[in-house]
Image (cartoon, rainbow, N blue to C red; front, side, top):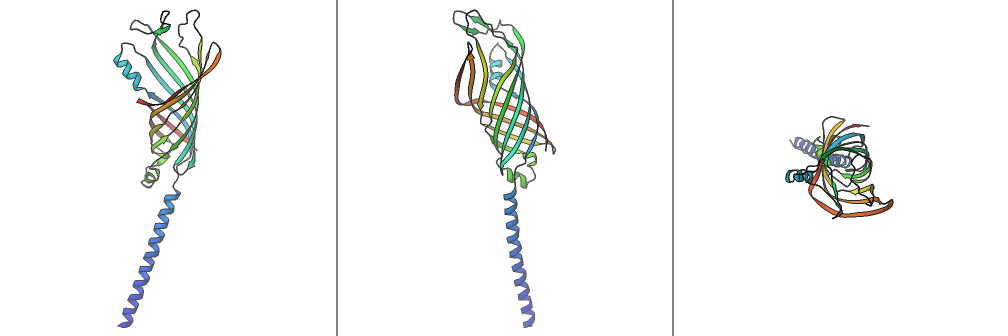
Length: 250
């Protein structure tokens, strides 16, 4: 009887010790797994557009309409720089098709004027841009554990820095005699952004984001003399919404 109790006690202690070691291994494994979770690296092509709430509001409240359809085509390369951070480099072409009123020049006030009698013209512009975008996918590791992080799906914060220049612009301002000549050369824009990415397959995702603020450095010429101006950082009352679809490849 005593021998049986002794065997049972040893067995119980051995089992308890095993369970404790197993539990410790499980915790260590889970901790290691979470630590090793990292965002994906990828490259691909994107096509997207955008909505400008200020333009929509002005079109609804004014008799003067200005409609622009932007189509952006770009190549991107997303590199991992930390477990939940990436750095995206991008080169893009922005096509703008516009139906805009033609301005008239007021020689008394020395300004361009628009009114309800202005006739409209359809114009086209093409911009070339290069962009660097550090991006933080917050909550990524939790989504990964739930199996919802394919192609870095989820919410993110980013700070894209873009340098752009106009290659083609068919819109021409009326230029009376003795008026100074103005030409935009390039813009450097910094725009804090919040967005969401959702994968629809192993190679395809949709993305939408809001530009929360912006600051721009302008490079332009007046009478062939190069000048620089700067707009102070400002929060947008009506955030710009953009959306895109992307095809990725390794």
